[in-house]
Length: 104
Image (cartoon, rainbow, N blue to C red; front, side, top):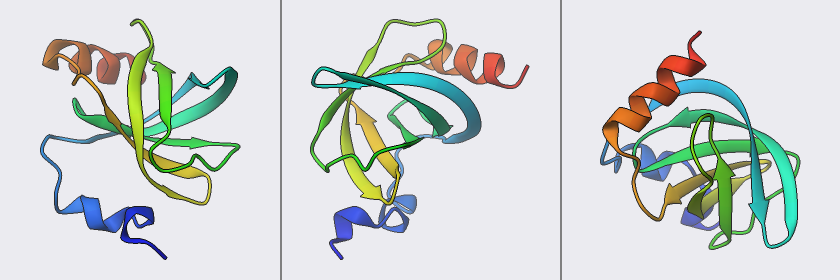
């Protein structure tokens, strides 16, 4: 198993606060649009759980609640859960609004 497929490797390397949420989202890879759950979120990225295994290095566009689709790269994947890094980090106020909305 590659180190890139093991999420624990990145647990100690996080650059920003990660909040546990459970939000249903849509994401798109190439021309395929799928539904998934965001299990946790930070300004730098998210953990996505869906119905398919996402290839490491794949670009996805994730539609989070209340904002335009965000481009992210799959950093690791284990079974049907993937860690994705945003190309452009979320603004802290946008991050706070998404987390607040998820906790309602």
